[in-house]
Amino acid sequence: MIDVLLVDDHPMMRHLLRQMVETYADLTIVGEAENGEDAVTQAAALQPSVVLIDVHLPAMTGIQATKLIKVLSPCSAVI
Image 1: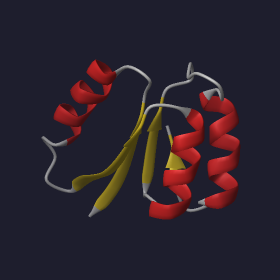
Image 2: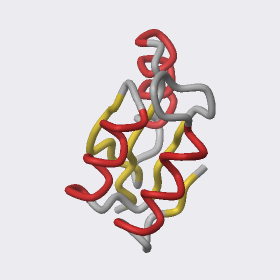
Image 3: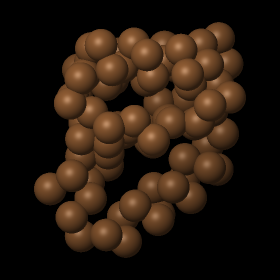
Image 4: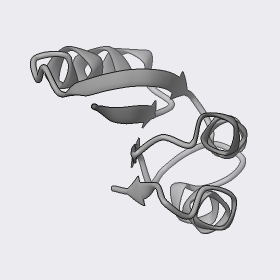
């Protein structure tokens, strides 16, 4: 099973991503975040296999969050 964390500041985009990911039997959504800070916190706690993250996030950009996620959850692939 591949655990996925969805990160986007737009609820509709997260909803659409969730629908797309849920069509694959081997993918499971373990969390959603709407900003970079929440993404870092959740990635550290959940240690997902994959983090799907938007680059343009409020407060902390997706790139800044990715750098921290890779430190706190080094086995997570970040896309």
